Structures are given as C-alpha cells and as structure tokens.
Image: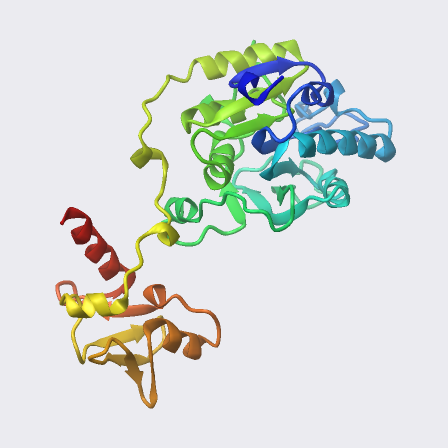
Length: 363
C-alpha cells in the first residue's frame, strides 16, 4: 500500500497491530489511542440501593496479568511509532490502572513526552462504597515520535478556546452523558465512550485541516466524528463488528460541512509580518511622552522619540526593557499596556499592533 492508497476516512476491521502493519511507514500525522485500561475488576459492583453498577467488564479489557498487558502495550505502541511521521505525535488516555505502565513502555520505545494532561471530570461517577477517593480524573499523555522534531501545536487556537488565556494542562470537562451517550436497546452502546469535547481539544491542538488521524482502538468512533467536523482525515481500527456499525452510523450522521481557511485555521502570531514598535510611533498609534504600564505591576515607562522606553535610569526597547524587568525572556507586545482614552481601560500593547496590521492589509 502506498501513501496515495491510504484508506482515509474508513474503519478497518481487525486486530490493531496486524492492521497497522499493513499501513505505510511514516504515513499518519497523529495517533489518538484509548486502549483497554486493564481495570482488573474481580467482582460485581453495587450501589447503596442495591442496583448494579454498569462497570467495564468487557472481554477486551481482560488480561491474565501485568506481564501480558505490558506485552500488548509494547506491540501496539511499536506499531504506532512505525506509521507515525517523524513530525508526528501520539495521544494515549488511561486511568491509574494502566497509564503509568503505558508511560514506561512509551518512554522505553523512544517517544518523548510533551505533556501529561489531566482530564478533570466535572460529573464523575461516585464512589459507592466510601473506601477510596472518588476517581474524578483520567490522564492523557501527549508524546512526539522523535525528540526535538518539529510538531504541530496550535497555541493560538487553544488560547482562543480558553477566553484568550493560555490553555492549561488540567481540562475540566464532563463525562459522556445525556443525548451524546450512544445507547442500543436502552443500554450503553460502548462502556468507555469519550466525550466529543475531549477529542475536540485534542485534535484542535495538535492537527491541521487535512492531517491524518489514526485511532487504533476506534470503539464507538468519537475521534472520527470530531475529525469529520474539524475537516481532518481519519483512519479507525476496530475488531468488534457491533462497534464498527455503531461508529459508522455516528459518522455518517455528521453532515459534510463547508471548509474555508478562515473558519478552521487560527493565525499564528509568529507568522504575522514583523512590526517595529517605532512604526506605531511614526504612524500616531502612540506618542512621545506617553506612559506604558508593565503588566500588573505599578511600573510605568515613558515613550522616547526614538521608540525606546525610559523607566527611571533604565532605557530600552519594549522587549529588552521588559526582559530586564522580568529577568527572563519577554515579548513586549504582550507585557506592556497602554491607557485607552475612549474606555479608560488599560489594554495590552498588542491591540495596537493588530490595528496597525489590519489597516496595512486594507491599504
């Protein structure tokens, strides 16, 4: 099979390792894996009212012991590493039952962990016996195939989704309930169905439109549903015919939305044309003698005629002076504020740069 023959936007039936071995090396941009958790349940769980807890007791989550589970993990992570592009990244989600063992194998195979994300469940299942803390989170490991390789991280998209604040590594999201929970004959269609919001954040952060997602444990197809909505290509692998049918129904129900770059790509500030601070001074966006305020501190600097700032005996550019004040790297556009006369509010200096660029593009 060549790259041109990749089975894009299809569910491939079978064992994930065997199927991945048929795919070309270096062919996918990102992997999202929701493997069996090896929960090791050995008895039925009951609520205080004696109703049975619908726990994960499926055959696919049964392993003879840790050695068998570790061997299984080694096989599928090795297969994922082969099909990932050198610039690719992998996401794997798990609980305390398995994620630490997965992380060990991940690192032993040469993956480089970029982040561990804590999915904080806003509506977790209660602990009915009162013998432990309520399990209110799961962990996602985000790793790159090759340490130091260039990879996709849509920083500005994540910041925009978070009310223009940096996205943190603790994600507060509800578990899959209500209308989103797929049911068959009144029962859960899949015992570990993940919420679409979780996959939306994963794919929005680490892929671009047209990229190829591989999900080796496709299950009910949530990753494919979200990939289709975000105009990403996907390949799902699933061995259970009932799950395959369920996933196909869910994905087919998603309409083919129109695509435009403006709708799906957040412009990166690093890719914008360079604007010297002096250009704002020359064009009247700021003026000589105007005060600029440093972050949330009480420090106030004055703009000089050559575009430098003066603060007491210190002078420098918006970046170099900021670097001295922080004793750390500083992007002056994001640390200095000006007083907006119309509103009386202090606004970040980058607001004026955006206005300048907008006028420049129109001209």
